[in-house]
Length: 282
Image 1: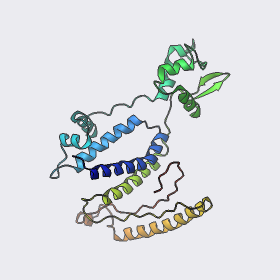
Image 2: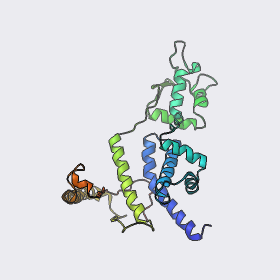
Image 3: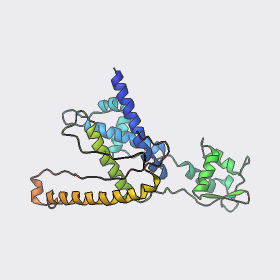
């Protein structure tokens, strides 16, 4: 039975989770990742962590216990487990609404000319218009928002009071894959340290994790602060790197490594500058 203390702890945890997810969701939206894709990913992580870290006597957690911990049905746990183990393919994500609209514009005979090319469409009309296209392929998304997004991404343009399609499909901008990989590592490492420190049942002492912030730094000093942090942070990281080099075993393949247990250890440094509206600064 939940107690007031338990409910209060869960509420605080959910508030913190909502706060930490904001910049992650910003990256996901920028990369074109939908809620459905993120939700499926969340299920996989929930099941994976519950299986690996909540087993009894060192064994993976069984499906019934995973279902109890995660709130998923046993059937859904089994489906996700098969995906994680490679026994079942991931379900293809629903066709992106923008891509769906563009595909219909290029393939549906109603919106094609006699020679099979996409028509320039009037904004509204019962047939062969942009409104008719959106009613058929944009689902329940607000049509005005769809048009603005198509124009913003330069997938369509207005020409002589009509709309002309410029692309056959919408290719998401994934950015630099290596930078995204590094971002995932940085967020993961910081979160691992925090999760360790707030765990009442952790093994070992708390790990170093500190912040120095001010809510009153004038905009005129931001560039100077950035320069100061860059210089001091680089100096610290070079000293840490020297220390790690001096205390690490030569190469992973060396015979001495077999006789010693090795861990990945290090320090991360990042600058804090909140510019987004609605940022919680408490």
